[in-house]
Length: 144
Image 1 (cartoon, rainbow, N blue to C red):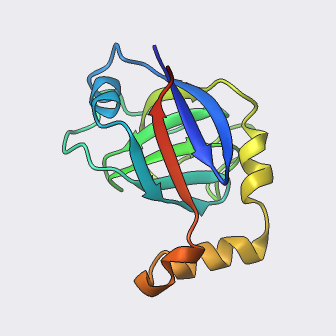
Image 2: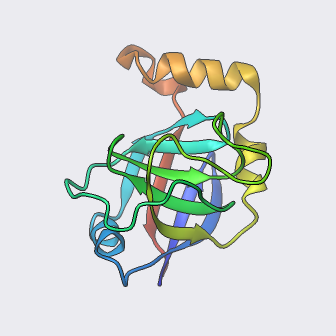
């Protein structure tokens, strides 16, 4: 496991990436990553293309999981339920490969990203390049 720091809205959140998997090694080799984010329910995701198929696909994840979606070419962080989730499980929008885990309480992301208007603004402004200053970004880097 390699420790990483996720910075979002000025807050630093500790996480770890499983470097025993090829996806984990590829993610670590791409650090630091800075990207615009979007949300889908309580899933944070951003574009990240590894150009490789998923080796161990799962259709349900745990709270705080970090996963790679080959179909959406995105890295996803699950801090709650998605629109597809049932009562007891978190269902991503398609199969994903879990590559890491948040080491801190995932509800900090819910607190940072909550609000209907914030989500609407993120969805609109992520698609309009002229409004980049309003778009929330994420930075992921190796912990020292």
